[in-house]
Amino acid sequence: MDLRPFYHKFAWAYDLLQTDAVIPRVDFIQAVLSQKGIGADSAILDAGCGTGRYATELAKRGFRVCGVDRSAELIAIARNRDPDAVERPEFAIEDLLEATFPRLFDAVLCRGVLNDFVEDGDRRAIFQKFSAWLRPGGALIFDVREWTKTLDRYAKAPLHRRRVALPNGSLEFQSETVLDIESHELRIRERFDIEQGGERASTENDFVMRCWTPGEITFHLSEAGLDEIARHSTYGDHDLAWSDRLVVVARKHVQS
Image (cartoon, rainbow, N blue to C red):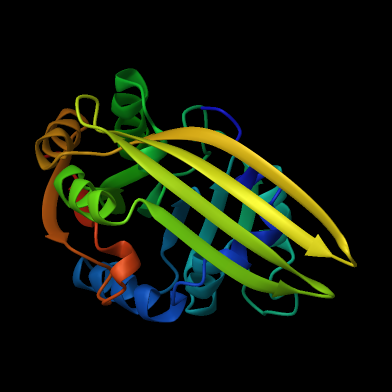
């Protein structure tokens, strides 16, 4: 996977542009875990943790959280989040396809990451990793862009713009999405325009995401020894920005 500037050069802008409500989504995640007998003091891996918003909130609720991301810039922000908190996650810079851990986790959370795995081999490998990281009976919660919903969403609105204020200036972000029907890929062009102190700077980049089908998810879960438990359209919210997502809950086989 190529380095996407949003996760590296513009990591400082991530939380300015991604303003989803973390607390109600963590409420949903916590409720799902509780239903599976996974409560406070359980060990959770936040795989692809970004700037650590979800990991930090889960740690506040008593979970022992390890957050990993391949972006050193995002992890730096995560490590500086709520420095005075009594309970804080541990964070590590790791490529998910290469990561190993000295212990097993009671739950793995993977949000907004799996669409970045474009190649078939990588998509298979990440589910094998999920299984390897979980204890028997452990829970997996993840989301993907579901192809038919994504097709409908971006056919109607391929262009997204957002403007946020900066000290003595502003940041304008734009993304334009082209759909590849045959491959289920999103070919995306991002643009960052910064005006600050009377000076302007622009950066453009192209990258590719690949959506998932329900059948593909079922196959990879089964192959990795994971039982699907439930599917949801959201993390319990009504955010239209997530109208193309599928949230899946699974559990690792318990050996008899």
